[in-house]
Amino acid sequence: MRELQRILPSSKSNARSSQPNVGDSKSYILVSKLAHEVYEKYVVDVNSAHLSGFTFVIISIVYLAGGKIEEELLWSQMRRMGLSEDKVNHLVLGNIKQSLELLVQQRYLQKDKVNGPEGNTMYYELAERTLDGPINDKIKEYVAQIVKKDNISLAA
Image (cartoon, rainbow, N blue to C red; front, side, top):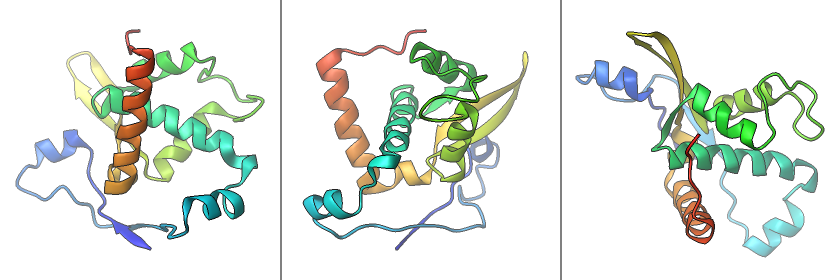
């Protein structure tokens, strides 16, 4: 088990730069020490592989956007994959909004509302579980392979 340092969204940490960028609550994750082959054979649940794929894709989109993305741009990218915010009965993922919210609850992402001249804008930002050293390194490695191979662009 490893403790993750809870972080504040970047807009809140910038506003309070004299305070540390750490919240009061604690988050923990379990880290497997099993060999990859053993983990794949005995731990990986093929029935939940779609959630792992969804998590990886969403985190990759946010990562490629610089670690923070406006909610509307994220939904725009998801719509390009056939995932819309009003889809409540997706064949594999079920309610898409709830699947995205689950990533926030699991601390892969965090949501932040920013007040601007045009009104409030919601952002998704990488959270501590994604920014954790080994996880972050794997994400960077996989994303780099995909981008290099397919020359992917986040243009809307």
